[in-house]
Amino acid sequence: KLNNYTDLTFNLARSFRAAALEERFQYIDLGGVIYLGNPDLDPENGYYIDLGTRFWMNNFNLKLNLFVNYVNNYIIDNPVVKDSLYVKDNVSKARVYGFDLSFEYEFVKSLVFYGSASYVRGEDTEQDLDLPEIPPLNGKLGLRSNYFKYVTADFVANIYDNQTDGKINVDPSKWQVHTPGYVTYDLFVNSIPLDLMLAKLTLSAGVENITNRAYRNSLATNRGIIKLEPGRNYFVKVSLNW
Image (cartoon, rainbow, N blue to C red; front, top):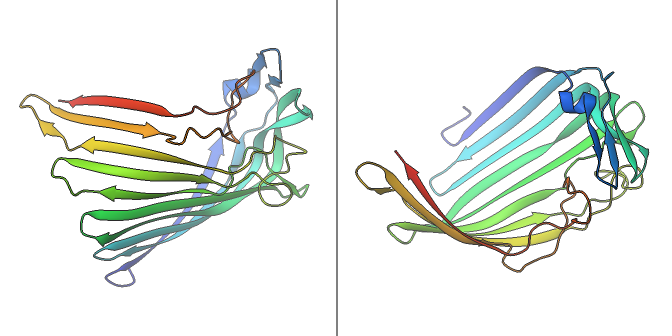
């Protein structure tokens, strides 16, 4: 704790992960791309380092974390034949690093502006290649209103950068299809828990992807002819908690 408003955090971890059954014996052939497992996969192991800071003030807070993960025998889908055949394989030495950021700012009473951002870079350090299946820079910006006694409302913009060539995230010519950046908008309305004596009732409603944006998630596992994510979606939810 540096002062009344600022904290520092530090984490150091040692990791180990044996390959899952799916990674060892996967066989997926739906008439398109074939995904195969590998019974001879070595277990992953490595070190993880995280350094963070927190700022806490009356109407503003900020969290920032920087991290790096050194992994031996990192497991990936290796493109034996691009867009046709992928086989699980080990990357001898991998490095994954980036940052996570989030904040909230109450600039008017009961009206909060908030956001988050995250960035990850993955590298095969032995072959000087970018790792596959690494998400692009992405984040959220939103407004939350608590003006009403029993209801809160959120308007959120979900922002994703494009999955670019070269040394930014991945090289699509080697690993995966290039995906453009996109922004979608959501609106959520939630009631506070209402006490019904024997249980508490919460009502939620909203609209996801308000503009019905057509977009593709770079990490989607959709197979066959379905490539895009869902369009505009309306929902109503009722939750009972005893």
